[in-house]
Image 1 (tube, helix red, strand yellow):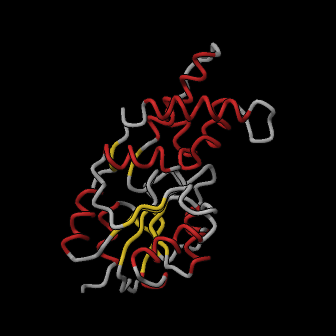
Image 2 (cartoon, helix red, strand yellow):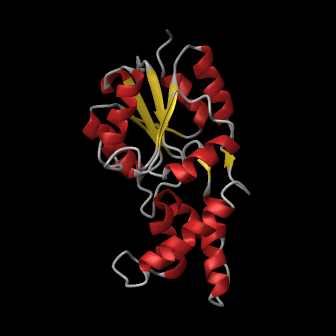
Length: 221
């Protein structure tokens, strides 16, 4: 496999850098408890964690954005999540070593997530990820992934072209956003992967089974 000669590495947050599923799942289980429902195992909720409130409410309460009470449930869920978003969220094993290695190579790295900044900022702080060269949240640009706008905004802030970066994510929309931006993509098979989970069919330029595997894909500078 050819290596990427890149000037920066951009990462998705949930399911790629951080395992946020326990706190997202805890929030929806709190809503279930208020309604007299038993908690769902986190492993049941994990595949949809990258979809945030929409995914959690779909699996946790069988609700979709077309339901009349969806907006109020979403607000309740988000308030619950905000109150405890750093209780059990952790970096995936090997992420800190990967980020330190990128820094040692002189490669800036950044975060591009669909999570709104009101949640992104405290999660980033709790995980000591403030050394990111750029952070683009779900409400930083008018459009979220799979639209390319967030990735394009990250490149603009870094002063590089999309072709000079790579994007690492764990969801189909991450690969779609990278493709639309003209940026190479790497799919993290250790992440949440969505309900389908057929990562091999996404068309990413490369797959990694662990965070540290990314280093083998990067050209030596």
